[in-house]
Length: 232
Image (cartoon, rainbow, N blue to C red; front, side):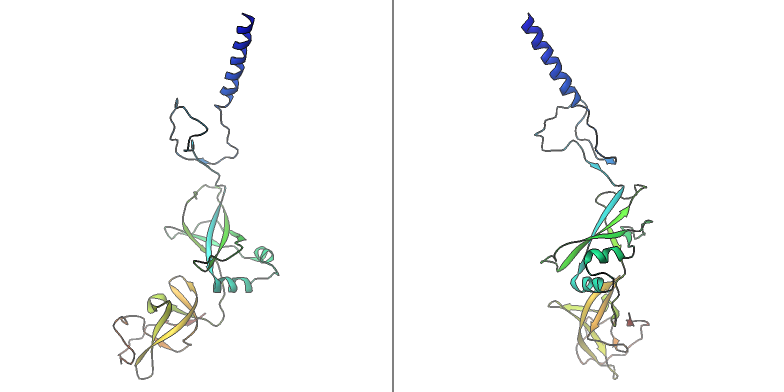
């Protein structure tokens, strides 16, 4: 009988321990995801599916990429001997959301990846944004907007260019209104425009519309489009 009592007490102690496991305390506050398990469902530590996901979104990380030319310009225009020093002097950045509205809080770039992606030729940076109102969620998409100065570059519409064998071309118009296909060096983007460092100069005329069927030497009757090429 005594042995049975001891065994029963051990079973009670074990049950109390197991009961303690039924209360799960979150290590952080945040937003909980869907609950695939219903009340009364049996769970097992080996279950492949998590019970739920808790997202701490008091601040959110926005990861974005810069091409090599943009990154070199990005590094050269801010003070500091190291990337860490430069990050301390960077101005705030803004976040353009999927509906093209601008997020109300400014962010700060606080991380630069250690290497360029061999496939894309770009490097990843991270900007941190406060999210005290919980307007952003994990998985949101958007665009990080930051200032990068490109001295002595030109701005032309992307839709005024064509790409052939990984090279970018425009059609220039000479004094006799004859056109010629001209390669240009693109060093970055600004909205729907390309930043061009070589191939055309201030004062050159380029075709911005209707060039799909044109060929070198074709004489056209141009209609001027204001602010087609501007110095940045």
